[in-house]
Length: 145
Image 1 (cartoon, rainbow, N blue to C red):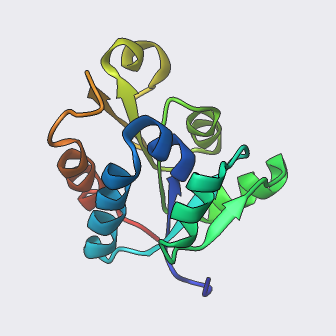
Image 2: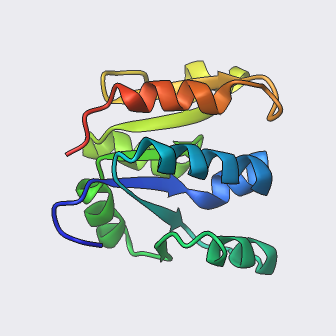
């Protein structure tokens, strides 16, 4: 990853497990089409064989099993992170970095602090239409450094 390039992180396992590979591919392609920065996948741990195969086929840099300090360094360097109701979202909040989080409607009020940097997108089911479009609209309003 070149210096000076804006980075956009994607919490890959969250999206693969919550929404599935086809939906996650659509999100990745929509973010590529925005051309606002270089994408990378963040993977905490516990990658299964099918997840690993999918990740390798995406031609996106992958950061996996990082220590807390290395995760903090990566997030600090990032201009925007896409995740959900995970520990990563809370970590992003502590670092005061922009993030777009996907939360079930029943979780959003409890686990998704909304601010100028943190934007939550609620959904009833993973088949809700328009989730990616809402994320792209929110992303379009974020100035990446």
